[in-house]
Image (cartoon, rainbow, N blue to C red; front, top):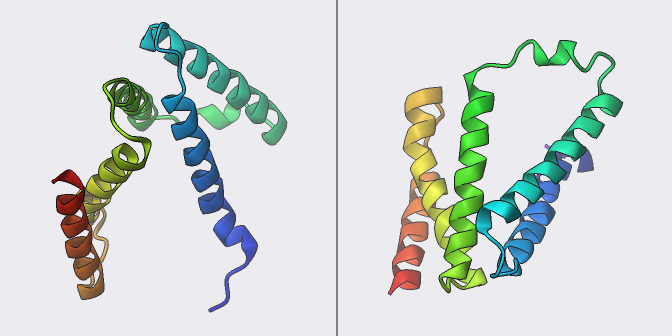
Length: 142
């Protein structure tokens, strides 16, 4: 099955965004409070999201009626992720290790969560990949 560029665009966007994210996190000024940095980052994100909401939606306020607990959970998780990486980099974690270890650990933990919560299939090939990822984590941590 052939996939169009539209199919891959969201993942390309996450890759580019994540690269910019980690470069920005690693170069944050140490003299500034992590929470001041995050406040500026979130204010920027809020402004950008509001602009996109206004331009992308015909009825921006009506599109917010379906919000539920997951929006709040996402907000908490974003703060946890941001603060975690910022503090990790300030404690000396290397750019090429912190994200790799964190993302591989998350990917492995999402396998049983996806199965239990969303009835997602797990193939033998996926399990073999997870074993390789765990092996890679062991090599990186030692």
